[in-house]
Length: 200
Image (cartoon, rainbow, N blue to C red):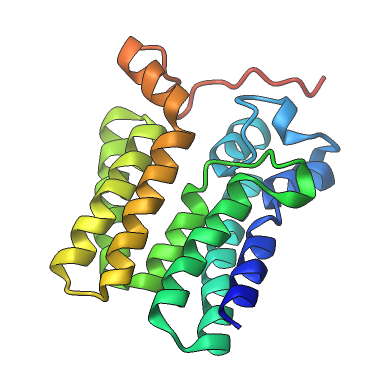
């Protein structure tokens, strides 16, 4: 049942709401526009606030749903935590869409909320503050994933939650490799910068 719940989590994660909404709203493959990332930020830049917010919320919900299903199937805290990894992996490398997905931050928000609402709040507040000051969404995202394991540790949550959140942070760092390079070189795009749209 544990393995089955993880497979289900991966398959749920593989539902790319950014791709589906972009196809529905504009008839485009979001991965061929803007940054090429199938996630909430690129959807926001290319299609606007409505679709961007929809992707953010739906991607977060699928994290919660996958973990909830795992809890119902197994009742095991470790299986529940690891399901969070599988749903994020599905989002990042979706089997339905040629393994070309997003960077997993919105789905991570749902997973973290499943770990601890307070840890979620701490990480979200820090991320929002960083984004508000710097206007770098990527920097705020990395602050978020860095703050989560620290918060979970001090909140004395199950150790599986802590170790899983560390792996999630590594996932995020890997997926943000180009953003890190751009930040260091001063070439990272800020929130509100116009995307290079290809809708015409």
